[in-house]
Amino acid sequence: MKIMFMGTPEISAICLDELVRRGHEVVAVVTGEDKPRGRKMIMTPTATKQKAEELGIPVYTPRTLRDEAFSALLSEIAPELIAVVAYGKILPPSVISFPKYGCVNLHVSLLPKYRGAAPMQRAIINGESETGVTVMYMNEGLDTGDIITVEKFPIGPEDDFEAIHDRSAEIGSALLSKALYDIRDGVAQRTPQDDSLATYAAKIEKEDCKLDFTKSAKILDFQIRGVTPIPGAFAYLNGKMLKISKASPVRGVGAPGEVIATDGSGEGSFTVACGEGALLVRAVIPEGKGKMTAGDFIRGRKIEKGDVLS
Image 1 (cartoon, rainbow, N blue to C red):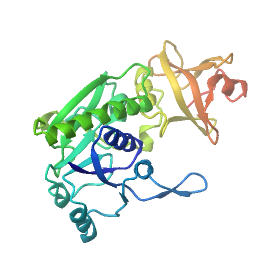
Image 2 (cartoon, rainbow, N blue to C red; image 1 turned 60 degrees about the horizontal axis):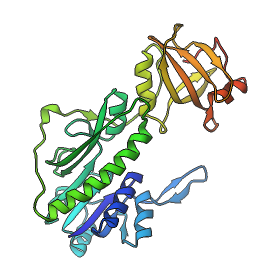
Image 3 (cartoon, rainbow, N blue to C red; image 1 turned 180 degrees about the vertical axis):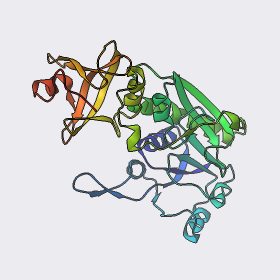
Image 4 (cartoon, helix red, strand yellow; image 1 turned 90 degrees about the vertical axis):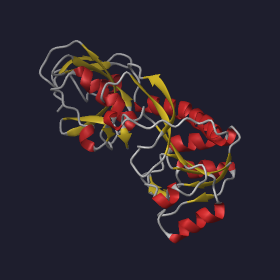
């Protein structure tokens, strides 16, 4: 079965590598255009493009899927199935209807819950105890197609976005591979989604990352883990942004945002009072600096008991 693969970020590259490793015939890869990255704004290919070139697969970076040029490309390559993992663009009906076996998407949530752009982050932020990956047929809706297969896994008490991303990539790439073989062999299941159970996982914005210490420590812990390592949860200390990258809820009483204890020994920690309970902070990223332990931050005289984060 000739497969065209569409994807952009690291999770897509991992899935592409797994499909090839498991013997699938990936004949072409479609990904985003090179973009300037880093302080020097060097033009950099997507993770998926880099992986495709490493594997010797032809790569295409169309600006749109809706013109005659892409239609001609589809006709030339003639894929029997299109596999999509975090491509970032809506597939038009002309693309969805082209392959013999349809278009299949790996979505990193337990559909129909958390349709949309940020399902992994939103699941953590909302305090879910489990998440998972879904392989589905694509249609013209947003993550609304019939489900082929699903696999669940727990969200641990210290799991952040990075941990869930990596687990989703590992489990999802294997699940996608199996689903594609099931489709080829004519044994794939097809289960319509229950739209009444759907929720929308909106893209993470800056306001989703700003910490409000009038909330409970438990809620802030979910928020921090949901946006760590990127884009990162933050507050302000003495007018400068301070990202909090590792913390946990503990008992504590004080005015919301007040630093009620510090420990500068070893890796160290400092404790910030919340609307309910407190946050024990163990790692931070000061404005303009790299990640450091709370102990280093305290020893640098950047924070002390009585300071207030806002």
